[in-house]
Length: 409
Ligand SMILES: Cc1cc2nc3c(=O)[nH]c(=O)nc-3n(C[C@H](O)[C@H](O)[C@H](O)COP(=O)(O)OP(=O)(O)OC[C@H]3O[C@@H](n4cnc5c(N)ncnc54)[C@H](O)[C@@H]3O)c2cc1C
Image (cartoon, rainbow, N blue to C red; front, top):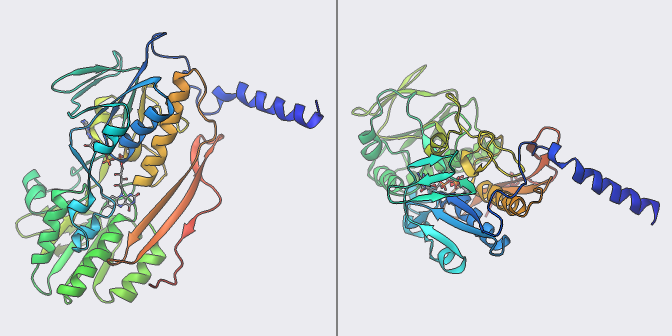
């Protein structure tokens, strides 16, 4: 054997031997299911993260894993592109997809139900109609809104008068109707919560879409943006440029403006510094991991997002419960592309664990996010992320970038 080849093999051996030290120290690779029986994996939530994870668990395990998905909705409505519903460029039907393709093409059990209890010790998940046992549980619950810091917001205000439109569906259609019916020269006020929140560039894309609508049908209308953050969180140069060049004089952006109180009758909004009256009001509330995370005991008293091991997405609180998508605590953007990237790493890791192997010690994935300026022009940001074995987190790697500032058709 050549010396170089010997060294290469020793390094691979050394690396494999040290694997448990590389971030997955808490992760048991012992098969958790009974010998001779199929490992049972239950995935809760059929959004971008959950549906993707179920598909790849079923494909990559080649029949070695019994996969069940529990999701209450018959159809999936995509948040990506839902800002275009506000401008009238898309309809909610264009963003509504049935699960039939997944159900037909992959051997996955689909249960249309709502999980109401999780017992991490007995490893069971309950809906009002049935109880499911699991060897590994994947939670992909998305986000929960937290209105506790905004005085005056009642559930019926949110449902009927002050939509968030931050989960696509009826709320998006309601906000579109309100914008279309707004008086000529009226004021649209929208608020952005402190990061981290779902889809960093999403609120600024929303500003573009509403401005696009007003430019056509209500050119003297104004948009006031109350941003709790000190500055535009994502694609700042691009958004600033298109606001100036395409929607000059329409957008009044106010940083460091967290909403503290709302009067739902007068649509008066108070921040620490000022009061603003709206004709149409869109409060995007602060966010935290979906309710399932708390239900499973994965969050401390003041914790908003779930801590995971980035090699497998096993939660730090319960090793047999994996969490993916927006609910994860990380410096990664909470996007659909990111949710599907995490879902694939998680699925591959579970297949490895079930087979008694260690997960990939150096996952790499990408995130690309497009923001629409009007009905046909979009700008994008793309990044590659690589696992850092010292810090035990995903860090931006070389490559990626944003659209050129020379925006044109
Ligand atoms: C306006 C807007 C625009 C966006 N644009 C983009 C974009 O252009 N590109 C991009 O990449 N991302 C975009 N995003 C972000 C993207 O929508 C989210 O990051 C993505 O949906 C996260 O996926 P998820 O699977 O974590 O959560 P979700 O997609 O919300 O899925 C969660 C699922 O869990 C289910 N669930 C919850 N509780 C239970 C329970 N108790 N029992 C059973 N099931 C349950 C829900 O029904 C849901 O199906 C946008 C978001 C918004 C709001």
